Amino acid sequence: MKATYIDYKDTNSFSKTLLAYLAGDEALSPFYGHYPTLENFGKQIESKSAFSLDQRTVLVQELRKQYDGLLEDAPEVRQQIDSLQDPQTFTVVTGHQLNIFTGPLYFIFKIVSAIRLAQDLNKAYPDQHVVPVYWMATEDHDFEEINHTRVHGKKVSWDRPSLAATGRMPTEDMVDVVRQYIGMLGLNGHSADLATLVEDAYLSGLPLADATRKLVHQLFKKYGLIIIDADRPSFKRQFSDIIAKDILSEASFRAIEHTSSLLNERGYATQVNAREVNFFYLTDTFRERLVRTYDGRFEVLHRNIFFTEEELLQEIANYPERFSPNVVMRPLYQELILPNLAYIGGGAEIVYWLQLKANFDQYQLPFPILVPRNSAIVTDDAVVGKIFRLDLTLKSIFKPLDVLKNEYVRRYTKHRLTLRDEWMELNAIFGKMKLRTHKIDPSLGPSTEAVKARLKKAINSLEKKLLKSDKRNHQEGLIQIERVKDRLFPGGGLQERSENFATLYVKYGDVLIADLVTYFNPLDFKFTILY
Image (spheres, rainbow, N blue to C red):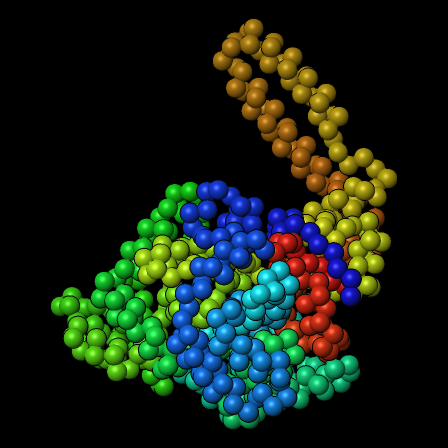
């Protein structure tokens, strides 16, 4: 493949807050630690050096259990897991829900960004070792967000009732949805290879977390990617003191609310809202919010389960795995159990992480460097050639469709479609009219301006009609522009936010991932166009 890069701001697809962060806006500096540069990772390594050998031992032992049966043909992953016992080994993490068949394309982009960042850091800091990690959001319970994907614009869904944490859901009833997905792959290219990976992952009777690990592991094992499921008692025991303290003191609620108000005062939108209690109560059959009642007890909503303060502390001590962090506490949990340097996330994720630094500070945990994941469009020479033949550029193609069409017509029309000169003449006439009416009656000035405004509106309307009429003379070119936009921006949005990776993998196979690793540059903060 070949790559071209453009500024994120030129895509008109990313939030004001993310663009301000990438630009190093001073107004945001209190809300993060080190800005993402190669040099600043040295400082981050120092701040994470307190990660203990006991924590590393728990991490390595748990990962070996989770990878049971998967490491025989994956020496790169085995070495990465073993290396985490070394005090000079660190991680860079990306996380995502357990979308079936990996969900939208940016799922793959996130993981590739982590892999490439780890490679770059290993070159820059040869005395340390950095491992890429995919954190599976196995405790999330929003099944409707993960139970579908799109291939060639067509939706394939796993329709069944949701159950507790999605990572614990059985996959025995996925036979039909797997067949439907495989049927969309066609018979050419690498379709058989992908079909084999999908069947092996989802038709082996595994819980969804293990099925997802199996598929992602097969795609990325040669890059040494480690996949972690934090829904484990051994990890939760390390977190139990914070669970108890935070529920009783509501410390996170106050810290995050204060930070959110500061961000809003500076003109930045926030993404998440903290609650007084930021934990769910989790079992194999449900995940429900924990709330404090008016009489000082704690209730598991909708389950008629109550705890006194003393009973709650005992429950946390005996069964920490039953307490599941919500979106504002999960990052704290992640940073507690991993020797982590950076979090790689999408634009919305980076924004909500900016709300969390004060919470990290009060629990005396190092705040990770925030690195926006790479964002990209993957296409081919035929589409790019068409863009150039239409006298467009890889930057201009991000403009709205109507704008591109209007610019195209104005570029190629044989007629003058603007009435600017005529309006200038009329404007001069109105100047004379206003002067004349003022001499007769000064109060008639507003009436003159009102007539002028109505005429200006009519002329603008006439210009639009001229442009619309002339578009008929350029219909072929305008249809080509529509087709290019539909191909690159399915449904009017970025390709990565809707389409599954399947169509690209069928065409390119493992070369797709290899090329993404080659051309993504996580610390350059550029949108990538690959073709």
